[in-house]
Image (cartoon, rainbow, N blue to C red; front, side, top):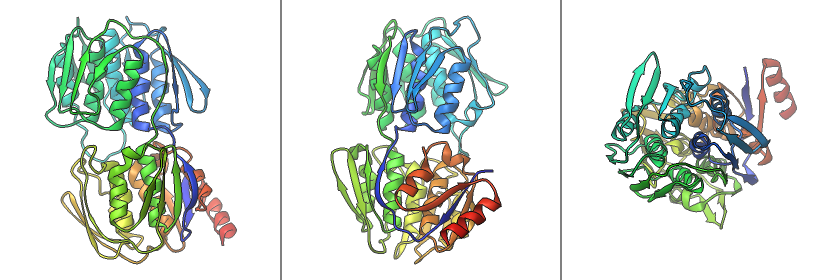
Amino acid sequence: MEQYVIKGGQPLEGEVTIAGAKNAALGILAAAVMTDQEVIIENVPNVRDTRVLLQAIQGIGATVRYIDEHTVSICGAAINPNSDLCVDDEFIRKIRASYYLLGALLGKYKHSQVALPGGCDIGARPIDLHIKGFEALGAQVDIANGIISTHAEELIGNHIYMDVTSVGATINIMMAAALATGKTTIENAAKEPHIVDVANFLNSMGANIKGAGTDVIRIRGVKELHGTTYSIIPDQIEAGTFMVAAAATKGDVVIKNVIPKHLEAITSKLNEIGAHVIEYDDSVRVMSDKRLKPTNIKTLPYPGFPTDMQPQMAVTLALSNGTSIVTESIFENRFKYVAELARMGAHIRVEGNTAIIDGVESFSGANVAAPDLRAGAALVIAALVADDFSVISDIKYIQRGYEKFDEKIRGLGGKIEKVDTDKDIQKFKLKIG
């Protein structure tokens, strides 16, 4: 079983280049099957989630070809519209993005079947808003035996109000509505950067979508979509993770290939606690040389502080000089990392959806397990700060969303190795000393 072994105490210094946005890529890869023409997608992050989704897309008959490590060609011409279009696979249940194929296939073929979504166990991921949106467009939706099935004689544009802001439902409804008859309006739509990226991608295929990035998206359905070449935006969460790692380790890191506007909530909090962030056109530099200050954080939909950055920021606050309060308003199981951090010496108590963090001066190395993707990244940051060695297991979660994570950390001077056995751990310890 793969693990990370880490020797802490080394400030991260140097430059790191950020990959394409995982959350944008998952929507865009699914949407690529909505035309019979070839679609070329650039800046695709080479992470487990994208590879699993591409396997699923291939499984329903599309042609998938890697042009290079980060460029993929997809052609949906070979998909048989008379098949059941069932995406039911041992892999697809592991990733939440499986449900994006519902909207894409429903839009193109007027029917689809997809296994219920999986991914990290960080709380309920209700699909009621997806269902409500599909039904508003005229589809019939059934759930049986762990499979969601959609079917429509015709999709008709409609006015859809989202009771709760949902990124997944916004993308799914947007895809289905792109090929519906007439006009669709999505109110209280999610505004995340990857919503805008999926909309821009669909528009490059001939869709007519306006207002993405605001809370009202207007879609005028078109008869068909065509091929395109498109480059995915940089990953704001990977960028934020390295920003926080630089601050926590008292380092000096230039994070390249980013859109600074997407990072404003993270930048603001890092500046507030005493780190120094400098923004450039397509990069940011984060520096810190002292113990940081406490602050209060509440996760909110974009442009608020992202829930996907909450665990990483909590690690940094657990080392600050004072008491911080972190309130999680998106997912109810997002504090599962707290027990693992406690093994390293953190003082955190959880009351409902709030964590009260009393900062300590340092962490101690420990054997810990990653409970989910972002918590796993947070534990890596904690281990990079800690005295002595740490071993992190269940890194499969981390590999879902971070490309070459250990390589990039080593490139910044961090002492980390991916290992398979106890013997490998001992070798690393002897080598590092």
